[in-house]
Length: 374
Length: 145
Image 1 (cartoon, rainbow over the protein chains, first blue to last red):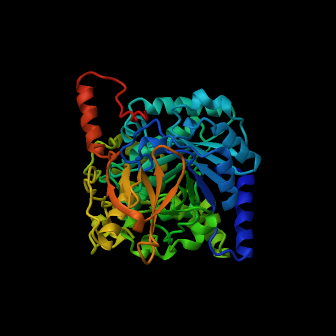
Image 2 (image 1 turned 90 degrees about the horizontal axis):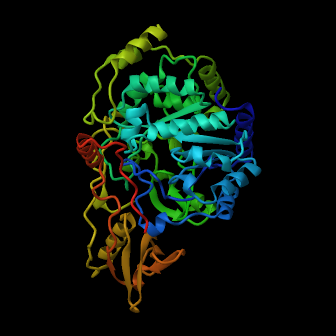
Image 3 (image 1 turned 45 degrees about the horizontal axis):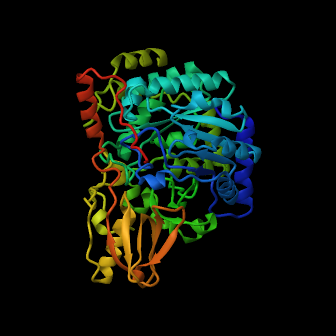
């Protein structure tokens, strides 16, 4: 398992407490965005398209702590923007760790090596490094040549210093499943604790609006990638969510599962959509018309979404929602190979894409995968 | 929900689970726009577009004051008096709520911060620079000064 037992126990007891107290809508992870400023300018990102005076704004540590305490989640993810650009990020992280929150600090790792000394290794702190695939693929996706190598240096330095390091990968239309599988091999060799992977979401404010996977294509891609798993691969994600990505399971969206807080307030309804802001977490829960969201709602803005922020919490809540959920999850943990001949065929199928430059293809990896999984 | 002019270009006859490609959104060219605010509907539509806009706007209030800033939220009530634009002025860290009824004019004065930054633009730039022998090619974030 890619998550420490203490973390899994904390999350499990938290969820059970919420259920026993009769709380209908409760969050799992607070998405804390202390700033929108970034040192990358990815075309697919919808988080940084703001005027300079907004990009200069930052949450103070006190504002961060207040938001996290309001939501009360056992886990906090710190995306952005690039959190390492925040001049007080060390105080924010230290304060959250002191509150025994499991913190995932999302970073493109361009500054990780340089700023590593600001942090202390802890079971409560993981660096979640954004890598969108092998070198050429990542560099193209983040619009920066050389970015992969810098990030990998940062990962190695953090692991060597005793930090927990995970990765977070977003896949776009044209992603080559063989390359992604080879990428997983590379990450495991480097020594990351676990990997997260999800399809990209068409942010309304992103410059790029043309390279995002629809649900049918996402499921085929994730079936190809996540079936016939290698023993060495470790994922930092709910096994039920991963089955959802592979098309083995249906979930409805839990938009309140990973609420986002930023300089604007609590984002309605979720980390991805911007339909307004609430000043308090309770106001977010009470004033959002939740029936308007999730693919099942018919809202076209939710049509292609299969992202963590809506569906990972659904997977986790399913696990702890019934004996059946627990059994399904246990099966997924202990029998995690997912042998699938059809998925191997998908690896050999020519890539269908109108965006061939996003990823490159490598049939050599497909042949290697077939040999190692046979 | 946002104004109908912002509907995503999705084939309404295809169920989400059958979609191969996620339809993106067609964005209007709003930079420099000064909408008519003659009717209540025109006002509501203009402020909805201001909320979606990726740049600053300038509000002129009926008492003559002007506010330049980023519209990060709007809250719709039954009347213009009950509806508010929430704006962060460009020169201070505060959030102002301004009733629709108080606003005489709005102009999309700031630059659309994402216009022209498509993935295709990046690919084109990358190949041009590569052909010119450049290394460490990247789209750099814009200066904040």
